Each structure stands twice: as C-alpha cells, then as structure tokens.
Length: 350
Image (cartoon, rainbow, N blue to C red):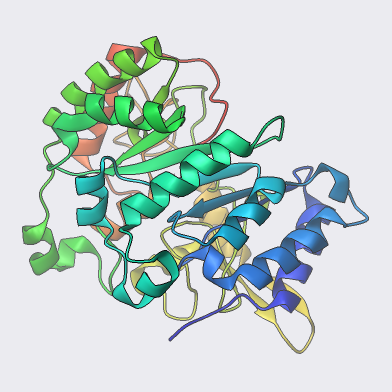
C-alpha cells in the first residue's frame, strides 16, 4: 500500500512544531522516495516558509535517492538547504546496491541510478553559486565496499561532494526483532573490524583533502550527552508519518503496524478533533533511556559520547530499548580511542 502525507497533517504538524520549538528546520524523509510526491513537497515547503511564526527562518533538509528529474532538481536548487543523497560509492557499487527500477527507465533514457545521481550531484553543486545548499552523501558500507573507502573519498571528491556520513550495514526492520528471526540473522554478515580499520584510513585521508568522512558509530563524538540520538527526545524532533502517526525514529516510518518497534510511535493525528494525541508514557520511557542509567553503560569510558548506541537498531535487534550490542559497543570504544572528541559537526547525521 502506498501512503502520502496528507497536507492537513503536515500543516498541523508545522503549526504545532513552530509553536513548541525554537527550531525552524523541516526535513523530508519517508518510507519511499520523497521526491515522488513532488507537488506535496512543494506545498509543505511553501507553507513552512510563509508561516507567520518564523517562516523566514525555515531551513529544509531531505534524504533522497537522488534519482529525480530536471524539474525537481531546478526546484531543489532554490528551496533545499541540506540534501543527503543515498549514494553508496562508485558506479558498480551504487548500481549493485540500488539498481534503478525498470519502470522509470523512460524518465531517464536508460541511464543507471549511478549515472543519474552523478549528473544531478554535479549540476546542483556547479549551479548553487552563493545559495545556502549542501549536497552530501549518506553511504551504506557493506563487506563488498568496506575496503574501498579511500577510493570512495576520491570518487565523491571528484563529484564535488565534501560531506559524507558512512553507515555500517544494519538489519532491516521486519515484524519481529532480529533475536527471534533466525533466517534474517543467519543471512547477515558484516566485518566490523575490517570496516573500522578501513574507516580510520579513509577518515585521515579525507581530512587531508578537506572532506568530512563520518561514521554512524561516531555521531556523538562532537559533544557529551547521556542520550544517543538527538531524536530521542521526541517532542523536539517529531516525525509525522504518511499514515497519520508521530514517530521518534527513522527506522519506524509508518505507525499503523509498528510491531516490536511500537515504543517509537509516540502520537497520532485525531481527524475528528484535528489535533495530535501524544502518548506521554512512551515519551517518558524514551527520555529515560540514558547511558547513565543502563547497567552495561554506567562504567563505560565513552558513555557520554555514545549514549548507549542507537535505540532503533537496539530495539530491532535485541527486542528491548535497553539492550546491548557488544559488537557496536566495542567498535565505538575503539573508534573513540583512535579519534577522541572532535569539533562540532557542521551537518548532523541524516
């Protein structure tokens, strides 16, 4: 089933958010490609930017597959401030991980997803001029691509990209947690130690070229907090889902049937009253999940630069918010020992 965020909910969400937060940042991210609902994106952006309560301060971010037409590209140039492309590396890697759906060939004249991405990235960067626009890459690293990270730095640099966040391959969300899904668990493989070794080489190499090469494992190395995710205080970073719910996690994109990920569905649109109903018990539970409170985190030397790791991945894998993934814990500690605290990130992980 396909869902599109109703404008009524988007409008009410912006009204509520602007009335309760200082931020004026709007982000497009969803269970599908946001630019497929281009007119709705335009409608939401116009409303936010014309809002009487600080619309002149609105900034817009999107995570996109980057495979969009010239009309979308032209509009994005003047309306998007932060554009993260789901871009996994050189052409052979990108086309293997993210092949273009054949039904869209007619729009792109037989080009591959990598070719369309390259063209859009180059055009946006070459034409941005003095506009407040950053085009970066959000890159999933697999065993196939882990050893190619330094090559990726050169490749992205050649396209004009200067900001890259890498994500070690993680499990997709299904109907049960991974600890109860032997088939999915057995099919997964990722060499974390190999990734870390290659990441550190690429990190220093990229730094020498003026490229930011980030890792999801290091999202909190730029500050101290007992929380892992900046979205884990749900009312300051709500996600309005296409089916009328409020999620506090990017891994939970629809609310009607969240299964074991239901702790992240913290609210719902009520069409009769035209209001949002919040579940404050869930909000309190998420807000209470801190590295200072979890037994396996209390004595960890990097507890304030990790925050107990990603809640979404933890719940999806372990079936409980306060679970522990020992592999991720060891990886973060190893990475922090190598890099230490870093300066504030200009652009947060998408």
